[in-house]
Image (cartoon, rainbow, N blue to C red; front, side, top):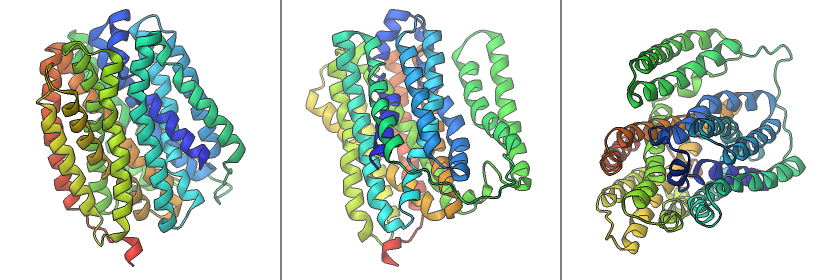
Length: 446
């Protein structure tokens, strides 16, 4: 569990530590129109790899994938810190995203290997959620402080240090549990290709279609969206016929699993719109320093830790634990409403309080999505079921950061971010409605 927790720290730092550094990166390298790609590229690469490697972990074991993913993250982070242009930075963020996707797929599924009993697993999943949330909260603070003290390039060298700790602990302590499988197993290459296109092509197409003005890019954007839709249509019959499908459709056979993933999609969008664009608003519009902006962002994910702890204590006592998610979505919506009041004269305590509300709301949502999907899945599909909800969250993150980034680049920072916050309010309310329709009995009550 130390190795798994270290992986959670790495993936959290990987996704968030540069968020408060990006305004300084753009100022140094230029390319404000590419600002969104620094986030979108990472989440796009993550979304493509999470499901595939979640399934490969089910088939071949998770330890090798955990180690390879951390090596990729280290390489991408170091190269990102050496970037000489925004295009290079985006390319290396994509490499980080590939490693991050592998890491997410294995980290959140690994406790199911060690603790098959859900009643024991829920306590350990809480540890992972707390570790992830705490590291995500520290990420913007560390990024802002290091950027202000040592320059933006230094922020990219924090993740490799955490990854080295994770590599050592995972190599030394985490067991390589090899699943029982058919010796004549054939990897589903066609399904993997179609899944990659179905997830990645529409996201890249959306960015090209609406983020760049040239007609050539718009045509490429339309073509990618069409390719993605076509791949998704072909994926279903291909996976039904595959001997060992890369994406077994049975993980989505219940309405509860479908609703959980829809809620995860929207939650990812809300969470990372807040993480990526509140610092931009605070620094470029209100004039805060990177370290001050990072400090004000801390309660967003620190509050997630508090919400997760309260959720973990209340969960065993609930006959209908889905109610906790409805409550969390209400807190999240209220916090997003309060973000619209931010101005250059807003007192620091108000920003801290608002970010705490948003974080606590997420704390009642994110751990339950993973736990519920694992409860619904068969043991042989735990990895891909866990990876699916992480994929939908990554997809939401990519869509959210892309859409708001387009508005920021084409209109203005103030209008773009404010429009994104209004969307966050609407999405939070939709999350509450979706969660109210998820009816699951608590396993500890049966």
